[in-house]
Length: 352
Image (cartoon, rainbow, N blue to C red):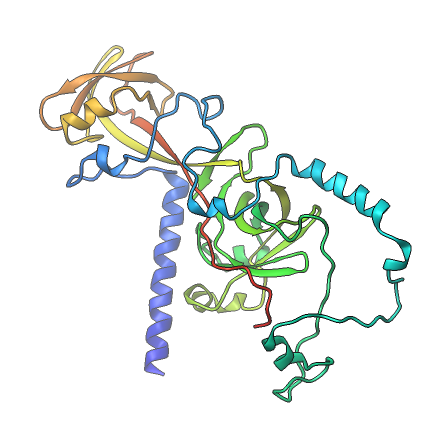
């Protein structure tokens, strides 16, 4: 009992830390601290600056992870889906269909574990206990191929009432149509007017995001329910056991959807004169200032500018902006890198 209470206490502390991180991300989205002991040009070597998140170019096939070699890249999934449904309606013979309400006999090639649960002819397996109901569903064309799927997702009322913290890449159990599998999705903003989408670290209450996972392709419309697996998250919120924590629907099947993780480096102006400002605490080395000099700056009050030169030996810099600077403004630099969903293991539909 003492060990169980200690585990529950650790899960509760981890939950409170995650909730504090979510609240901080809502107040100061994407802001990170520049490390003092590591050069910024080394720590953020994989990031790049963009003049505009909407219009700046970013090739969708650039620097792909090894997991993308296992998935299919469909050019335009909605058109492919319509063509496949038309071909299936024409090519499928009437005698190959089973009328609704009729009984049929199926012969399946199944793994040994399936026989142990359901028996060679259905019913009771070798364990002597009745297994869960067996659900069979036919697959449409291309639905047996692994792809990158995007679902719209939002927290349920029960999850918001329990103040659940849903972080990106956290393990979830997804029920998409008739399929149920474990996944570790990443979340991004639901923006239909851009080819690049900003990564969301948390699912904020009352907001809809897009969840991206590796999974077998599916036809729309396809509803989605997300459940918590057994673990620390479920121990911290036991009232959500067996209840869906998020719901949504299939948005697209597209491996070329670009999701960008943004970090925001901030500095404080300590001397201002009209459009000029001396900024500190964004970097701590003059080499870092010279490295990030081509990246555009912006402020929280709407000013835009650039770095002119390094000042001193402690990472201070001289900057020039398009308007009069104020002492209580904050200077920001946005850096981006592409994010990909986390591979959650082999996709197998054997009975567990």
